[in-house]
Length: 186
Length: 150
Image (cartoon, rainbow over all chains, first blue to last red; front, side):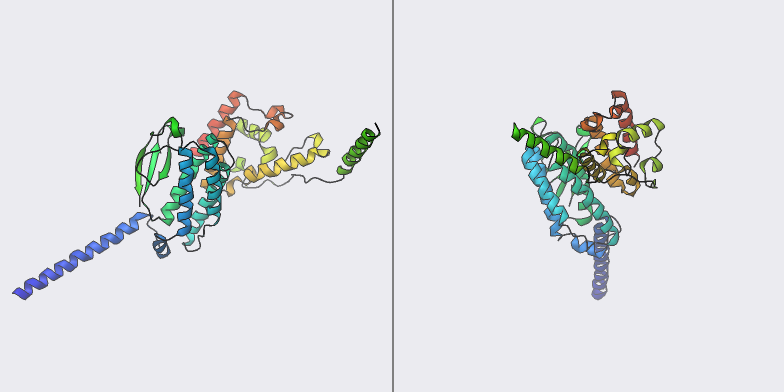
């Protein structure tokens, strides 16, 4: 009798852990798009070149938050370089195409940022932010990112930040706190 | 006085000399199937404006002015056209991805809004290329619609 109880318990335990594992797997899959493949899974945490792009993007964002045109231009040039250095060969064919498209577009915006006045830099930063958000959706990242949104700038504009606290890169000191976190990316 | 004469002579010789250096002409007979006007439903008025104000530098076909026959004006033009086509070539519109199209349309809107385009050096002679306020509003309206429909 005791043996029977034990085996029922064991079977139950097994069943629970099995469904649990399945759910976890499903969650993993839901993370990006459904067509995630293995190369992407391994890249999820370890694409150093994507991290380099992100780091340059955040430095650029901080320069814009600080109303620093000159610094933003420098960070724009650095971003051009890190975008150029990106290597998509370990991704699936479909993702490679998407990544090439994102990189081409982002490079153009970063180039413009490296040679423009602050208003122009901010305009380009808007589309650049969209590109970088799409990039992260494919490459993943080690850190937790916050997608923030300001409804006022150019009919509503988003950007990425490593901090929950809102510091607006589109307005800088003029309206530093405008915006809210609209999504957490991890 | 002598020295002035020499300088003028040297300049004259140089000016005549550079006339023999040919400039690359931006001209093509084929109308590519990827052209902006062919793949989008563009109202006639907008088509005309794009043709007159933009296509000289942003397509594979330039309606050259008379002074293109004279150097160094021709070099100046060649340079602008090269740069213009690199940024945006309406003839190759449909070869761009949706992402790239959206970026280009955004730039078009911003540059017409700010009056950055068409360039002052262009409208100086092509006076019909300038955008009146109404024309600018119409163009921006159309481009915005196109961007939203991507």
